Length: 321
Image (cartoon, rainbow, N blue to C red; front, side, top):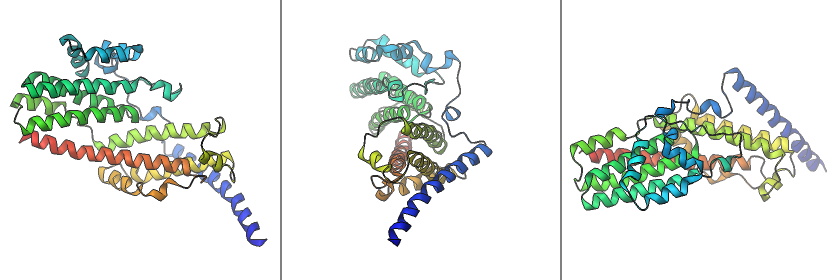
């Protein structure tokens, strides 16, 4: 009986400890002026005339015409792509996403932007193959600029879409560079379209926004039904309040390891390596299983960004040779 009593006592004490630690963490964040929400880590508003997302093509895209506009590019007319090039040339971007709405609903149109990337990539590759250097460079420049704009929003879905556009552009640029297909002027245009934002800071801001989104998701644990077996098991021995506190604290503390003292590529590389450990995912029913899976996903995403940055350096070094 004694071991069982001790075990029961451990389960009673552990929740209170995590609740207290999470309250302390939140208070410490307030003291040092750190926002655990979302809006503080998003880009600032920009003038409409400069804003990619205020261009007429993008306004129509997010007004429910995304599929129609992308399909139109499949039957290319010069003015269709010219408008896309003009849009991509805008100097800044601010998406103004409403995080008060249901998040999947707010982002349901974004995935159609991958179709825009495919159209630009297909035309650029075809133009390069046929010897139409000017068209190829126009499309590649647009792909690089759009990728940079989407990544600048500090939101994971646009960031991933922007990274995919950049990867498509890099593949065609590498082919053209190896075939010596680009003139000095074309090389200059491609180099000036390359993203210049510091990668360590970019990853940090994106994951800080994602941290806020996941903390918001954890808070909804009280209202939403327990759909997965893991979520159902997580409250067998612990209360929902403890599940929220334990997951929130685990997520924040793991991210802090890469964010302190300041985010760097080396720090993110170590973060990706450490969070790739399978045990970090947590056992189903563990109080931190939800946040463990989230951190593991973050590690894989960061690893992908670091790998792509190596590709960037390699391709642009080849382009300049």
